[in-house]
Length: 532
Image (tube, rainbow, N blue to C red; front, side):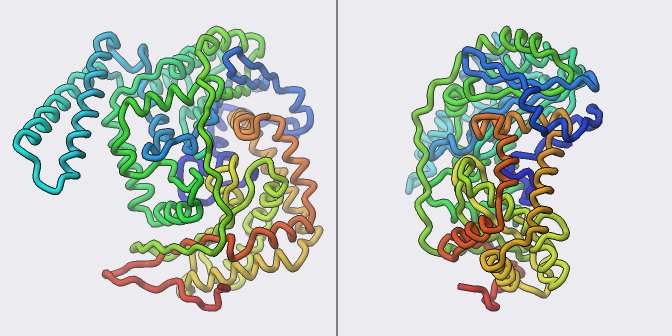
């Protein structure tokens, strides 16, 4: 699992490793890099597991009176059901709306209004869909019923809004010195982060235990509209976002990785408060969570605090859902997206997920191809041949836990085409198969990957992020150290073998953004010698 930053469009955590490194940098003094990632880390991490299954990881760092905290749930888009895509991401939004005690002026008065609003809203949308599906116009009675429900719905919305204290959770943290309060959702994980003064740990525990146990889905329909607007901006109206969505759904025919994390638009619009509440109860229990804390803390006191607050929360039920396995791809898949934007291309190959020995080899290949200005793709296609304006790769798209994709993304440099860039990329992949990576290049790449891992744990927020990440996806935070050993053991022969096995035409999916201008499609993906 690579620690390189992906240059993909901004989705909710398609790569998980360096998302939070910027948090709390201003608050955390520099720490000796090697001390963070050396074998002594295994001795410095204090691990505790509550009776309800919650895992707590702690590292003492007393340079400044600050603690960075990362709560990671092993829950994401792949836990959704057909017809309810986007629920994990939507629930992340709802988690900021508060609880029975935070975010409300009077929950006892607010609750019956929210219950009635959910009932009326669900019935209103059911009737609206029934009318929309009719081949004839709605009857007078049907339209009158919809109009009555619509009026009742608007009245209830207005009543509920009187009890809302907007953004109260964030304001509480802000008033007590918290920074970096954020969240993210991906296909594998949902994550919540904060850095705050260490003497405010009791406040954090009270807020987050309450959010985990007693979320209130207030402003549900308003926030659903916000998510739809986010989808329009990130996917529908974004050339790169739409290309990635189309490409990924073409690459995965059965597995949930083919569904966008934000969800399909029709699914988002049909989500109900009951859907969100059921998803929360089924998945977001303490037994699916890891809390990692790094900074100025006392492990014994912290364990006592977390036991008193989070320990009361019941575990979520054991999951019985099964994930459909992606069948072997038996031929190249190609998709085009027409957009009034400059052409670009994505090439992807199916590969194993975390835990397979070849996954670590792909991290090395990723670095060989696109890590820095001296990497092969940048040096050849951008600097020397000037075919591409930009190029990058990622070893884990769109997740890490399950078999995923190795992808290469490029934007041609006019007047060159995506076809020319594609052909040049295949030349570099063939070179990986035919020529062993030199000892000097392999050493440089492996050293850089190791340095990336060390830098990822330099700040308190980075260390907390890495510990929670590996615990959630690998099942053991110690895999941080094991992954370093696995990557350092990768040989030139491994690179050749993996490249030859996976970088084949029948295993690849290609997505091309084709410029559409004045109603005409500009053919930007001519063959131009592309290997078929």
